[in-house]
Image 1 (tube, rainbow, N blue to C red):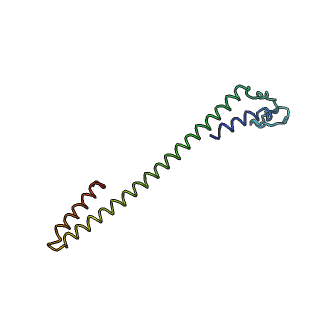
Image 2: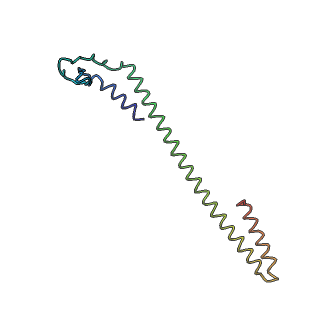
Image 3: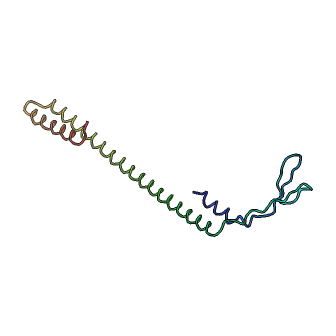
Length: 140
């Protein structure tokens, strides 16, 4: 995303940075300078003065479009992160609820095993109902 504004800046700054460039060959190696460096200096042709206004306008439109697309992508990613966090919280609540139902079913079963003969029927019904509630909310 940073490339397009930098490219636009380079296109706009191109004419200001245009200067005479000299190419020199010293000891078999080329070097470039803004001043002549001896008798072997060759003046290089000046670079073009930059892009035409139509190209600059198109580049600006494309830059704005890229920023809009990146902004929309960032919003989608934020929404997805919020949705994922919400889903994780809901799953944690469901796990806690299931853990609580498992404990209640376990305790009801223990109460039914310990109940006296006259209370055993009521305790078994309670244990059965706890088991059914657990099965309905928390499939195995």
